[in-house]
Amino acid sequence: MAEVSRYLLSVSETLRVHAPGRVNLIGEHTDYTGGLVFPMAINRGITLSYTAADGVVELTSDGVPGVLSISLPFDSAPNAVEPHWGSYIAAMAAELRATQGLRGHVLSDIPAGAGLSSSAALECAIGLALGFDGTPLELSQAAQRAEHRATGVPTGIMDQLSIAAGVAGHATLIDCHGLSVTPHAVPRDIDVVVRFIAHRTLEGSGYGDRVAECKRAEDEIGPLRLATLDDVERISEDIIRRRARHVVNENQRVHDFAAALGIGDYVEAGRLITEGHASLRDDFDVSTARMDAAVDGIVATPGVFGARMTGGGFGGCIVAICQPGALADGWIVSPSAGARRID
Ligand code: GLA
Image 1 (cartoon, rainbow, N blue to C red):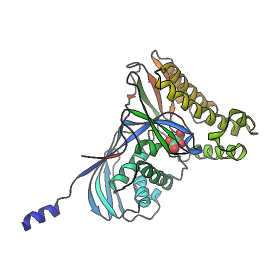
Image 2 (cartoon, rainbow, N blue to C red; image 1 turned 120 degrees about the vertical axis):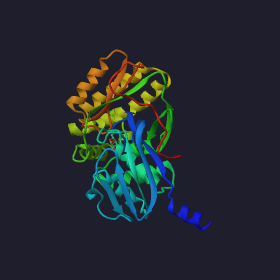
Image 3 (spheres, rainbow, N blue to C red; image 1 turned 60 degrees about the horizontal axis):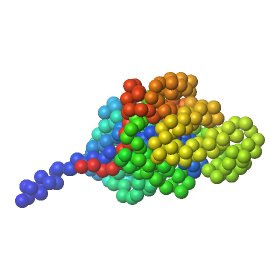
Image 4 (cartoon, rainbow, N blue to C red; image 1 turned 135 degrees about the vertical axis):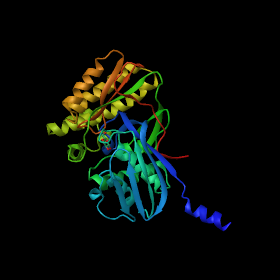
């Protein structure tokens, strides 16, 4: 009996959590003004296998050499942590004031810096592994704060909430003001295809400037989520007016896209996606020449309904909707469940 107890004490159970990446179908650069977004959690993501450990987090990753090792509670600057991906882990541990740690391994099939929210997936996965016990919304809010701690970039809630609250078979219409999440079935007779164009990081990009520019627009005409195009025309400075015009038009496009998808009008849904890209390129200035060329090429392919850059921009991925099999290059992604403990 004594031997059995000793044996049980020495064996620590291996546990697993999984957090998907996300692709945003439409509704870009609207979340931080409380607007509408329409992302879906995808069948690529991060799986973390681990055993419990006292007072430390020690992790290896299949993608990057080196061992992340931090002591708990963690209260230093997360962005000094090496390897770099560990800064998201450290920030989440700090956010949760975790003291019970873990040892484990991170397996990922989302490329970092691709605009598919690998960092948000990592934050949600480690949050669950560190014992977070709350609603998907609360998990996403803790993960968003961790992202801010780790990067200093004032990102919105879309990535973390779409990952925490993902629903298999569905995209999620998120109202970033009320923080409501409404699942919409993704039709099975279209492909959603993601094509990776270029690595990027939002740190040091124009992302923070865009947030500030939207704030300036709101100082002039009030909340952009409530503004009309007539309100936008009153903005005196050209750049600020264009930023606001993108946001107001994009919120409307999210509504229209969800409706078009719901009635199977893929031509209209695709048109809205492509129009959204033009707005991100011309009014919001977050696309790149390579992404524009890739979108143009894909849109000209037979069977494609529409394409656009997805995520924060300045590189990353483009997303297209098309007839099944119309696009040979890229990943056909399917809508998946949100972050969860598995086994
Ligand atoms: C990044 C941010 C999100 C959102 C998008 C742009 O992914 O993390 O909060 O602002 O850019 O839509």
